[in-house]
Length: 103
Image 1 (cartoon, rainbow, N blue to C red):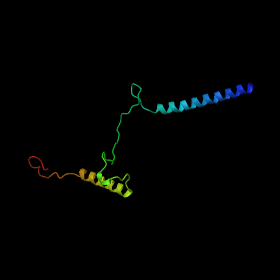
Image 2 (cartoon, rainbow, N blue to C red):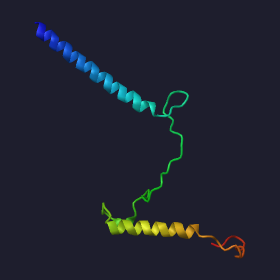
Image 3 (cartoon, helix red, strand yellow):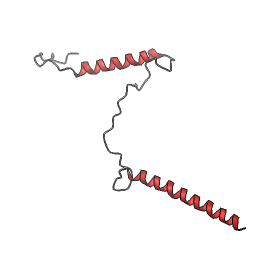
Image 4 (cartoon, one colour):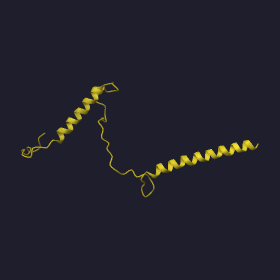
């Protein structure tokens, strides 16, 4: 009877130590999270949600579920070209557009 009680005490002690250690790990991890004054996680900040994934699937891909590396590289290259063209400095000596716009 004594050895069974001793085994239960050892098991309970190990369980308590395991619980304390796992709780301490969670508390340390939560301590690193910035909180608002109400105690909720502070999610304010600057986020970059840039993606080359369109909201709607282009029809040219049909039922194809995957892009080859070459197709993905072409999409990335086209996007970089588009960004470079739109970021180019405009000619400060250009004429004003016609009445009603140029398009």
